[in-house]
Length: 376
Image 1 (cartoon, rainbow, N blue to C red):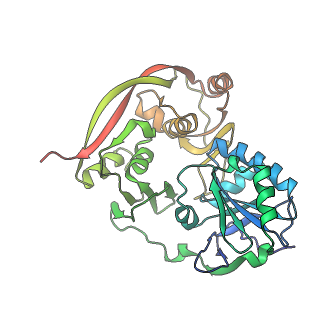
Image 2: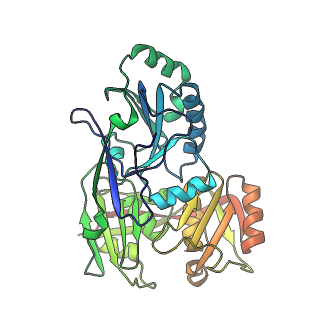
């Protein structure tokens, strides 16, 4: 049974699905796919699985949820919800097919509503929309689902449980900056990093720590924000960008903050490039204004991104600093990438054979940037 119209990649229409009870609503922009296991008719329980393509534990959680879904196909329905660009998620699903229903949280309202700041996470509802359980998705066990099913009598179909509301694509009224850099404070609370990079501007929004990490391509543990300063911002940079300008430092200066660099020692990965064999930019083409990265549970791909960009993404998936050669020309030029990262020896082989990068995991010295109020 079809209950939604799949939106084309042009994003002409944005769809919001609203949970139909009281004032408590779940909003998503679109369903990318229906469940290939469960029936959308007359379920007692609905489970929202919060995930992201970059979240390695989320992939294992999905395998667990797939098993649960297959054990209760007529009473229990899982919807995996990501707040990422739908094109990025669709490309990920082509690489890593998933039998669960998959949806997008366009405005991140659902992530914020349920205070999702650790992934994987999930919320279990009954047919009347009451929250029965919240927690890490892998912690939802078969016995728990069976117990909740025994306690419930009401049933509802997926098409009744969600109310589909169509609105115009917000990009038609999208704000375009007029200055080289514009900073807009956002509401307090958890704010996941969001990046919009198109022909007109670069927009980075989230906590100050997340925004600075992205702009400087620095791992999160290399940035320390003084108490009370890690507010949320949306920062716009008008295109074309000045490639010689340190835009992270420009933001720090705009906010009237100071930065103090120190060095720590700890486990990390060091890149050495004696004879680079970097790919050109013709190996991967995901089109204009699309996602630049595809991060699966074992593979990283990049379309027209620099060595510094790739090191930044790798640092997050491996949860440790990655230090690249101190050569701005080599580290900032754009290339295509496709390499394994889950098993270190395979990653070493991929990087050295395909790109001429020697990767070593060892105790390294790495910079840590302390952001604080400027001294009067």
